[in-house]
Every structure is written in structure tokens, then in C-alpha cells.
Length: 163
Image 1: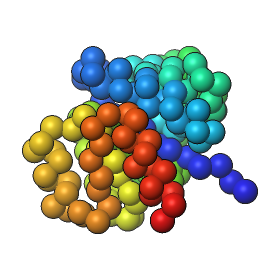
Image 2 (image 1 turned 90 degrees about the vertical axis):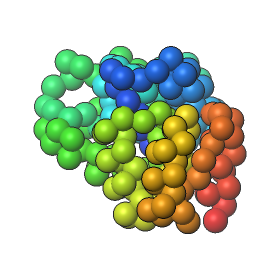
Image 3 (image 1 turned 45 degrees about the vertical axis):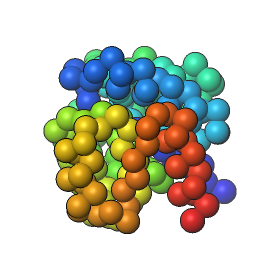
Image 4 (image 1 turned 60 degrees about the horizontal axis):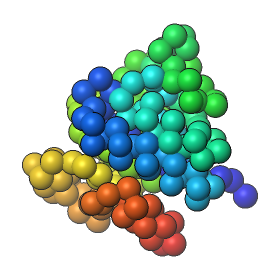
């Protein structure tokens, strides 16, 4: 039986303190559910915070990195996938995850959400502004879920996995 992989996507350098707090909590909760955490693998923002949270709970972390070097890799990534694809790695992130959680919003995050909805994959928006929520809901209301906090995001993941 294969492991469930939960992708956590979000801003890097532009992550807010709430994004970082939620991402760390989310990573921890993912690990506590014995799911694998997948991120963009870098040592900044939501990617780093989620990986830190998962590692603090003994979880397994995978990082899909944009280049061929580990120079900017999070120290909390167990398995690094070096793609040399730049932002095109976003498609690998989306295709590899069972469920996507977008924690916060940035241009890279928006591209990952759009790619996921096109698959179609379930996407949970956590800490997304109302304009972003409405935009993505208009694209694919049947595949988009809004979560108020990390605990609610985990409850939404469980509900999606039961479908």
C-alpha cells in the first residue's frame, strides 16, 4: 500500500507570519497522521516551515527542488528531488501529491493551484485572501475547499481521502 502524500504549497520569501505558523502546524499534523509531506523543498517560507513541523513530529518530508543543487534546500527535507526545471517543477509537485494544501498566496502558489485544479485534484486553501478564494472557486468549485485553520485543513483532507 502506498503512502498518502500531502502537498503543502505556499509563498517563499513573501510568506506572512501567519502563513509560517499555519504551515508549521500543518506539517506537524500531517506527520501525526502518518502522511508524507511534499513541498517545494527550499529553505524559506511555507516550504521550510511545513518541513520543520513535519520533522518535529517524526514525519517523512519530500522536497521537489527547482534546480540541480541542494544549496537552498531546507535542512528538514528527507528526500530531495533535484529537477533542474525551475518553476516547471510545480507540475511535479501537483502530480505527486494526493491532496494539495495552499497555505497563503503568491504567484508560484497560484500556478500550483491552477495546475492542480486542471488535473483535477482537490485543493484546500488555507489563509488565502477572499479575492483569491473567489477566483479559484470560480475555476473549479467542486475541487476547491476553504479551511480556516490547520486543524480544519486536516479534517478536510480526511474527508477528501474518504471519497
